[in-house]
Image (cartoon, rainbow, N blue to C red):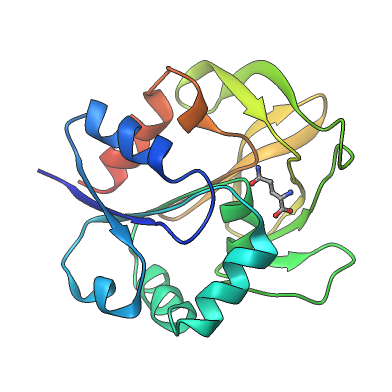
Length: 188
Ligand code: GLN
C-alpha cells in the first residue's frame, strides 16, 4: 500500500486525505519535522494561504528537508497554494519557498475576491476533468523541463516536471479521482 505524507499545517489537507483513501492509499499528516523520518512514497502540498504555509515551513524547520526530498525525486502533488510553494519564482514577489519547480506563478491571478469558479478542461494524459479554482494562481511561465498539462482560457493551470505535479485548481474538492490516481501511479 502506498503511503503518502500530506502537509497538514494549514488549509484543505483533509480533502486530499479522503481522495487518497478512496483510492486505497494510506495518508498520514506531516505536522513537524520528525514526521519526515517516516518512510513514504509521495507528498501532497495542499491549498491554503501560501504565505502562511511558507512561514510555518520555515519556522518548523521543514522547508529544507522537504526541498531535499523533492530534489531527490519524491513524487509530489501540489495544489493551488502548494503550487506557489513549489514555484521557482513568483511574479512581482521576492518570496521563494520550496522553489523546486522551474516555473513562474502569479498569485491571485483571477482577482482576490471574485476569483472562484469552476471549469472543465483537458488534462494531458487523462482527458477532461472538473477544475475548481479558489483565489487561484496561474502559471505565467513553464520553465525548462516543465510540461504544460492543462490550460483554461489560454492560461496555464497545471504543469508537470519530473515527479512534480503542480496544479492551480483543486482536484481534492471534486469527486473525480483521476488526478490523484495519476499521482499515485507516480508514487508507485
Ligand atoms: N490565494 C492563495 C495564495 O496566494 C492560494 C489559494 C488557494 O490555495 N486556494 O496563497
